[in-house]
Structure formats: structure tokens, C-alpha cells
Image (cartoon, rainbow, N blue to C red; front, top):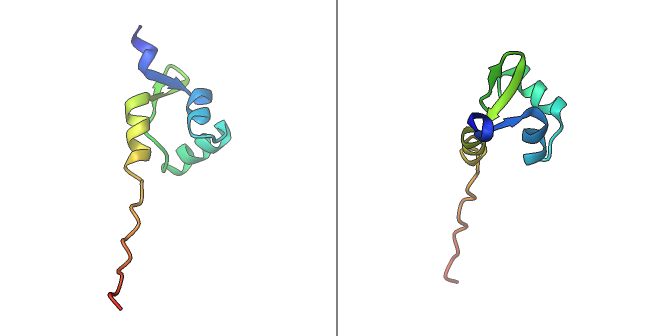
Length: 68
């Protein structure tokens, strides 16, 4: 089915353990994952949704050990 790769607001929120209200706040501030409208319904494309969060991973800097 065409919509198999698309998450509803509720499904997307559950994926990242946030509330639908949080996703809506992110959209209002234009800072959350990409989304699309299907009529009046908001959907998140699963691959883009996952990539959005993967791209925000922070790699800790390695600590330098001294040989003393």
C-alpha cells in the first residue's frame, strides 16, 4: 500500500517517545522532522523521519590520554 511508509502523528510521536503536542510545537517552530499533508492529515515519511534523527547524533570527542 502507498501509505505503508508514512507514519501518522500518533505513530511518529510514539517512535521517538514524545507527544503529538511536541511534534506540533516542532512544526510550528519549523524545527522538527520533515512532514507532508495528505488533505488535512499530517504524515511523516518513515525513512526521512529516521534520517532526521540520525543526522542529529552527536559523536563525543575522544579524550586524550597522557602517557604519564
